[in-house]
Amino acid sequence: MQQVTNRMLAFLKPFHLTRIRLRKFAQQPRMTMEGIQMVDLIGQHQKIENELQQAMGRVLETGAFVKGPEVKAFAEELGTFTGAKHVIPCGNGTDALQIAMMALGIGPGDEVITTGFTFISTVEVVALLGATPVLVDIDPISFTIDAAQVEEAITKRTKAIVPVHLFGQMADMTALSTISEKHNVPIIEDNAQAIGAQWSDRSQRAMQSGTIGLMGTTSFFPSKNLGCMGDGGAVITQDDDMAARCRQIANHGMSKQYHHDVVGINSRLDGLQAAILRVKLQHLPDYIKARQSAAKRYDAMLHNLPGVTIPIRVANSTHVFHQYTLRILEGKRDAMRAYLQSKGIPSGIYYPIPGHAQKAFETFGYNPEFFGESLQAAAEVLSLPMHTELNEEQQTFICEAIRIFVLDIND
Ligand SMILES: *Cc1c(COP(=O)(O)O)cnc(C)c1O
Image (cartoon, rainbow, N blue to C red; front, side, top):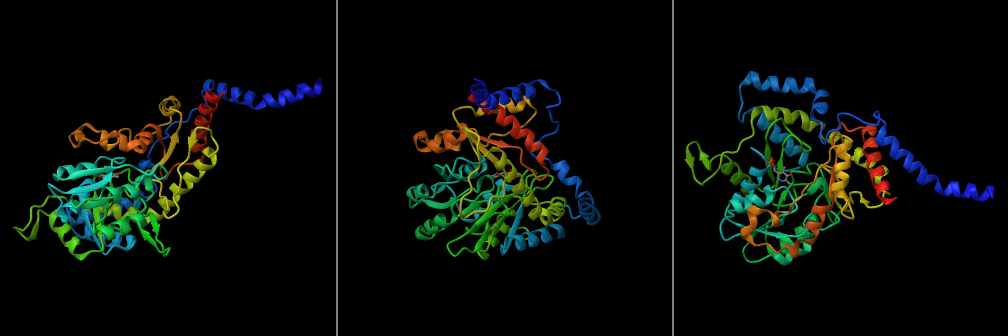
């Protein structure tokens, strides 16, 4: 009898512990942690405050507030970092996409193939230029554009393919490059979320994100992996002709002063942002490592939870973790998010409505049947706090809350 009781107790123990933990978590006020943020820029900047002050001081002294030597130096340094021959700084990541598409002469009657599971800029700019965004679904493993569907969507009107390296991991650039060459359609990589990621092609030569397509675009919005303290962006390319066109377009279509040969836009990086970016670019490799370490800690704490899928890494790309994005299965995503919120833990949904379902793009008449994976991702994704300052204690707290939520439901 004693033996049976012991066995029963042993059987009940995990359940018991869960219950006790749940109660503890719910009742004890010390089980809270203040100040967990999605992104901690203040913490990041405090560590390099002297460098930042010096850099900004240089701009105040020279008065070169728009363009000028800091912008030039930053462009050169970003070129060295990425291996891109040309860097054309501009006002933001959305402008960068627009400038790259304008350099290709994209306009009414043209089609651009891209994904709707992205920040809206990628789709918006195509429509803004009067062209048609041809949206295809995503690969559910990487959340990036499904290369097989890209090939099916190519027509005589296709002027560009725009993969988005979402969350810090690259789209299948080997397959996309093959399609691009076969059909003679250039690629513009939307690299706003994956600066510093690398792709290993068939020869296993690692290439920087943004340098494989004809052009790559990026954003220096503060929360991006390389962020400034306002708006900023850049187009990068190995192509001399595209570089010259982008420079001209970004500067009012000007060839020499007050000679405007093409219709352009006004899109510039300012001196303060460039000076700040020069400092932060030097730290980017360490920032990427910090994000990757944080991702590994999350993996270790979350990998065997039922109903939770940790980010899957694809074979050819490194992952620089702009976001650490889980899938929460069985329709429990929103409840989990609310639970985390109640514990003071922020989380994000990138993106809740895919481009094909956005009101602004209704007129293109997308058929939701073709976007099953995008819709499922939109219903399941949950991005956890991810930044360079995230520490193990915070992550333990976050993951404990997730575990308790999951186990409670599974009881
Ligand atoms: C942030 C972002 C952009 C736009 O960058 P902005 O600098 O905000 O204009 C474009 N595409 C993707 C995928 C982004 O994440």
